[in-house]
Length: 95
Length: 201
Image: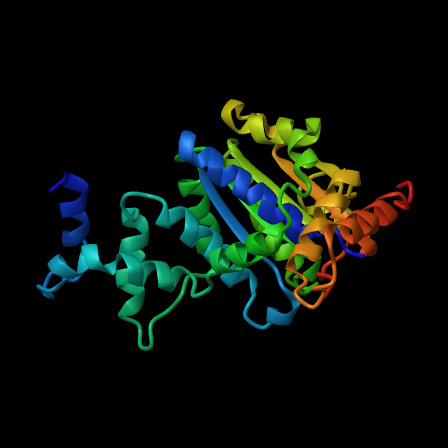
């Protein structure tokens, strides 16, 4: 058991013996506590509805590449990329 | 006809980043804002959800979070983190490795909540220079983004090209079960007719 792990247990409520066992199992409980929302489900849904290869040109643009590659080099100038669409590029799918 | 939406763009980028995460040690976190879910999509939940995905990718939940969780659960009924607390933890966990945060359709976030979300992103960037933020939304929120994120955002317009339209039409036709009568000749004709009439953007 690492030092930090032990310190962590000792830092709260030592009278509750079950804490020793609870800590590792708390992981999913902690994640739910951080947020009950599951955006990954929405992501899976959208990706299955997206046409193959649609919009792939975007990944080849200088703007995207600069933004994406800059993460390794810690370039603050290219930290944010905003992709905007007019109303016609829309929010909803054609039904 | 909506061929290439903000949703498409975001899911494409998130997929690309997830592929990269398989090869490199990076973290990817996404959030899809949806006006229909505006009641539950508060700044606390949006930022908490981004944090949750990053923490979920770590081998171990950081002690700072476990400790706070244990402390707060003792409060009657339990207590969640506040935005300032979430931002502070995000500043720490995003510094562990290059982190990509993607927020789709920011314009669908309730107007009074948007400044808090954007200011939180700015605070994360200030402490964590290897964090990247990807946003989509309608053009009219560009000013807000520039104001709150210090005018540092690169802007890219989403305009479908000919290949996008072709791919989209083919997908629609292949999924259209009611058009049993569409043979390949008719399909070619539909595609030809539509793609020949793409307006110049």
